[in-house]
Image 1: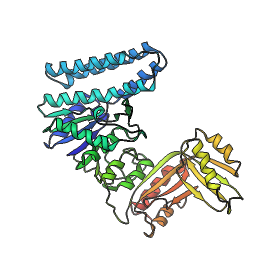
Image 2: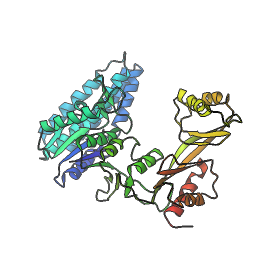
Image 3: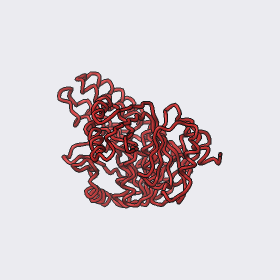
Image 4: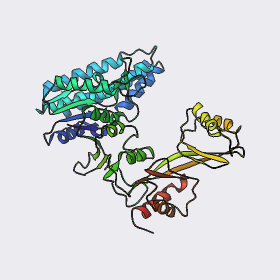
Length: 441
């Protein structure tokens, strides 16, 4: 069985729901489909929660009523017969009445997460009813009956595997199984969400749990490109990536996948395929555990980076220096992207400047501190094993006339990263594309 995930834009209107339904049923094969909330719905649910936090029940009710009218208008567009129209209208009425039942007093994060879950519950019910009306053998598998996290907030894979197996056995012989992305129960049995990666993460977890043949992530983008098509000419989709390469690209700017969401698939050795709902016949990008030796796969960039340099004449032979530096960042829950060291100093980059002033003030007790803002990390991803000759020189040659603040290599076999000014980002990406992919010298 394959696991397919569709995001909010893919089910953003009745016509989109019909298009997705046709896509998942036309080959007649059995599938488990993960759906997000209709595009725009989660934003409205967040707004409802914000009004309730402020004690403004009237404001929350106004948003609920607008959302209610929107969904009611969708029902006759999606469903043709009165039986299923009435079934969905009754379901919607229950959901919107439930949303209006939340009091403005003592509204907490627990209630907010319940509200945020309603978007996925509604979209999956609507698509399930449409498929059933079309005569497709379809079952709705409530994610809240099998998707659960443990005390550490991570998916409880043993529980998920056992429960989803039970649910599938309760409704055997279906062509399509539908479930919700993003939402889950926490270890206390309360409604929660997966946060990182959302519905993509759900699909990866389910794929690993049922030992799927393949996990497909459907978006409105044609896979991962070898560079940013918004900034660089002559980019092209990358048709194959190693899991580690995909994780690097996701972290450093590729918008399709969250870095953590492919970890369950990687651990279970299940390929992930990124596909385009606008061009369903396109091959997309396949991500698996197979490497392409000696290949540079892609380039990505991460903005809003700040570089911090700590120079200390006492660092030479002074054990414990780096530990003290890192403890400061740990104290302020600020992660480090890049790090470079020498005998007399260390440079790091961060993307979270919320506690920058406090960090800098504490670092000053260990040396002279310099801060460079408005920086950008440009990352070259591929088979970067150190025995492979020449790829570093090619990348450096491409950036020969661009000032480089830091270079990081050796922490991974899959990337080499350069810290440059944000104002040089577009030029750096174009030069790397020209030299690495387009054969220019």
